[in-house]
Length: 68
Image (cartoon, rainbow, N blue to C red; front, side):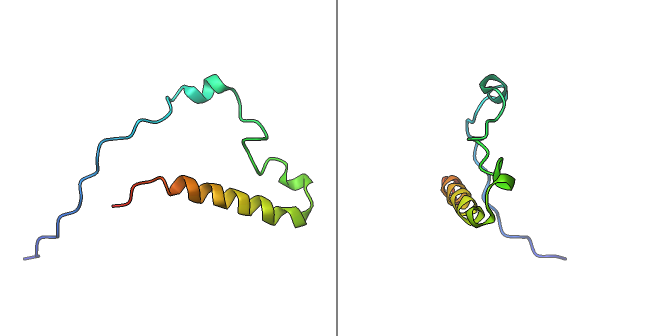
């Protein structure tokens, strides 16, 4: 017979987020919202800065997630 597994934390209630229709109200994404939109037109030397900026933004956003 197998041993019972240890208990795991139970997820909390869902967090409020943007309404599903909020994206439609704001219109289509603009180039300012997509940092990679014009990457092909930029010099390759500029690509590193674009990726580093987006990486920093993602780290900030992911840092707001509660850890278990």
